[in-house]
Amino acid sequence: MTAQRLPRKASGHSSTGAVSGPEKAPESQQHMYVLDTSVLLSDPWAVTRFAEHAVVLPLVVISELEAKRHHPELGWFARESLRMLDDLRRQYGRLDAPLPIGDHGGTLQVELNHSDPSVLPSGFRTDSNDHRILACALNLAAENQAVTLVTKDIPLRVKAGAVGLEADEYRAQEVTPSGWTGMADVDVQQDVIDALFGGSTVDPVEWGMDELAELPCHTGLRLLAGSSSALGRITADKRIRLVRGDREAFGLHGRSAEQRVALDLLLDSDVGIVSLGGRAGTGKSALALCAGLEAVMERRQHRKVVVFRPVYAVGGQDLGYLPGSESEKMQPWAQAVFDTLGALVSQDVLDEVFDRGMLEVLPLTHIRGRSLHDTFVIVDEAQSLERNVLLTVLSRLGTASRVVLTHDVAQRDNLRVGRHDGVSAVIEKLKGHPLFAHVTLTRSERSPIAALVTEMLEDHG
Image 1 (cartoon, helix red, strand yellow):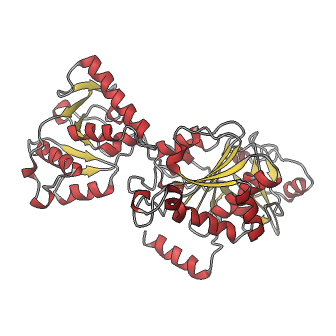
Image 2 (cartoon, rainbow, N blue to C red):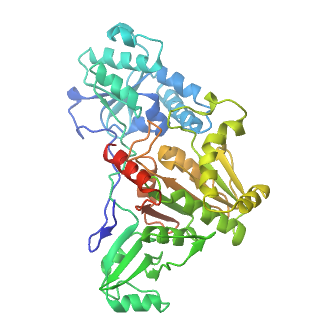
Image 3 (cartoon, one colour):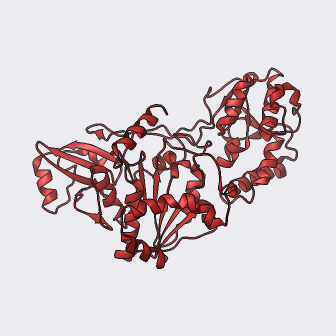
């Protein structure tokens, strides 16, 4: 994905519909949506977002929410979902009959019946909660109901298709991708570039570039004036300031325009949340780590760097399947961070970093209940995190702390996260806030072989 060429306005909006389908329908054609647990774990108020339609929760969903109450990442969402249902119980009494929900005439009920597994093919008649949900939806559909199973779980949607049941992804938290990369190409007058190199900031409106004032703050700019060029950035007060190409963080220089803008943002302590996107090998982790160590060891702006990584492996295993203590189990995930750092600094520097306790690599499960004060936080592989989990991470930041999100939406290991929710939704939501900045890195800094293979994988993704 390349930077946009101005003049052309960046646009985007969040999707508000829960699933695809008609906005309104006569009562006789009320559609029935059967929700699985993954929907409520991503949005505890999902049951209110289906307009005038009927929402059904199979009983097993309540049991699964109960089992997740103390989960380190999802526990809050499970408890909030159960509280919402308990509030409805207090208000209406029984939940096993349709009760009004939302502002558009919709209904909600907890389905106690329709659990007969004989409606399923023999291969699906196993002791599986997913199959219980499928059986409930199929039995309801057998009564001539217009039924759709709604889930964020890809395998469950595939299974639904295998038994002839309509299934859809929960989309209320998705965004319509705007194509915003955090960069824009701009044709300017030579005097603008001269003013920037002279140490001034430039008001784009005064120079007849009103479209730049509409860009989100902290957007990086490639300023082009004939044979002259410069890098700039939209400030929080909608002016243009120069981005110097010779800035460095812990000895690391930006090579591409995107990397230089990213480095400028990472070194700006006024930008509390920096998002670095891009495919593998574009330098996201290296930039984040070096900026963190620069802030901790050289500028002494923070006490330490903490890297959180979600424990989703390429093969789908989690920590519980690996031998050893928790720190030993974390080693395969932490090693990627150590490898990146080892390629950038000497062994003496590495030893100093670890001896002084300036770098920690932890599983993301450790963030619940913590308040991270005076810390440079890096959330690596953020594309595998659900939107609400990401918001939980951001809510843990204490005073004098900053966070960097590194992500590649083409490499999601969490099957419950789509390309247009999770970190993509967070970017669209925060875009334009003075505390937030995003840059998509495009040029691979790895070997030509690695760049070729990454491109092939994306073409087939």
